[in-house]
Each structure stands twice: as structure tokens, then as C-alpha cells.
Image (cartoon, rainbow, N blue to C red; front, side):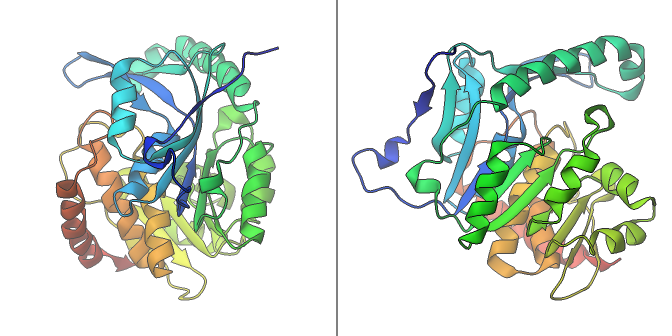
Length: 330
């Protein structure tokens, strides 16, 4: 038996007729502890695919809602950061009897190797807590029931939200999926049948490459282009990303926006949020990938999420022109 959930209501809509949300982003809230270049530690950083994906979409459109879960134990700092990205929070459900997931990131590969056993235990503990959190159903608020796009960030083929997203797709919404495919989860075989059903999919390159059985980006993209989705966008870290859509049938390489990189945590999630905004507006893989790349560029230049401002959005439009000029056929 668990305690009743607490729903975060959007103050903008209280006492008013609900405003339908165009972009619904579903993903976890995780509080990060990050080790910096100089060895210092930054604690209580808002992370998790949910907020990061929502920020990526919000950079381009004001009608973004976050569908997520947490405990009631979130520190004031990450909660303020969540408020500052200026998305609708009607879909944020808080459980008093569960703890919000926390994770500590090692700074580099050597440290990962030195602390491998400790980190694997931490991942196991974290996964157990997340599984308990995500096993609890959460409702779709009235504002979220007719979105243009529903974007899911999940590693669970049995996630209850997948069936809801498929139902929304049947009703006319675009179903976008960022599948979290990791060897530790042993979930590739389970997630593939879901990928065949979605409209948009954006995996990372290591997972996409492993499934395709090749490390050549063009071969990987050709393989994924036959899986069913209308838009494929594969994220390749510092190499940028690769995109394709069925209508234009052209493979593109989109380099990253040149910025001073501070922390890459969550850049892929942010990319996915920008991708759905660009795809919904243009139905063009080349342009949508550039929206996504620009969104990710704002995340990597600081710890955590920037505050959403009109200045930030104006800068995004300028960077979009730069990104479009750098795209080349793959």
C-alpha cells in the first residue's frame, strides 16, 4: 500500500478552461551530483530525461507539458530549476512514500574503470528505485489528451505510457520515442517491437550501431530507415547526429553547434525535445535535426538546465541558421 500521489497543478490554468498542450514529454526526474573538471562537486542538479527533453522542446514552443514522477523530497534548487524552464507541470506526480532518484556521475573513463564495481552497485540500486517509481500509473491531465506530439524517454517495453502513446497516435498525435538501450538493461529485443510502431525514433549511436551490426554511420542509418518510423535521428555525441525521413529519403550529417562544453549530461534528451519541435513544424529531417542540435547546445555549456528566457530563444533562432549551413549529406 502506498500513499496517495500529489499532483502539481499548473497555476496558469487554475480556474480556467484547460489549454491543450501541443508537446507532451514523458521521462524521469533524476537529481544529479556531477564532478567538474577541477575536481569540485556540483550537487542537487536537476536531471533526468523528462526535464531535459521538455527544455529542448520549450526552446522552440511555449506549449510544452512534462509528464513525470518524483518523490516529495526534491531539494529547493532543482525544483526552482524545473519551474524556470517554464513548461506546464500538470503532469508532474509526486509520491510521498518514495525517494526521488539521485545519481553521482564519474568525470572520466578512467575514474569509471577505477570505481566500476561501486558504480554498478549504484546503478542497480538506482534501477530498483526507478522501477518502483515507474510501475505506478499516472493519469494524463485533460490538457495532455490531444497533443501534436507525445515524446517518451524510456527503457521499459512494458511502460504503461507506451500503450497510452499508441492510443494517442491512433487519434492523430505523433508518437516519438527516445529508447534508452543499454547492455546493462538487456532490453534491445524487448524494445525493438515498440520501435516498429512509432513515428519518430532517436537512439544513441552505440545502441543503434549494435542493433545494425555496423559502425559505419551510413550503414547504420540505412538499417534503421527500414524499421518503420517516418523520422530517424541517431545521436553520435561529439560527432553530431544523423537524420533521415521517409518522404525525402536523404541521409544527413548534422555537426554539433560549436560551443564550450562544460557538461554533456542530458544532451541527448534535450536533443530529442528539440527534434520533435522541429519535426512537427517542418516534417523535414534536415531541419528537425538542426532544431535538436541547437537545443542540445544550450545544455552542454552549463551544469543543469538554463532558465528559459526570450533572449535564449532569440539566440536559438540565430544558432539554427548556423546549424542549417553546416549540414551535409551523409
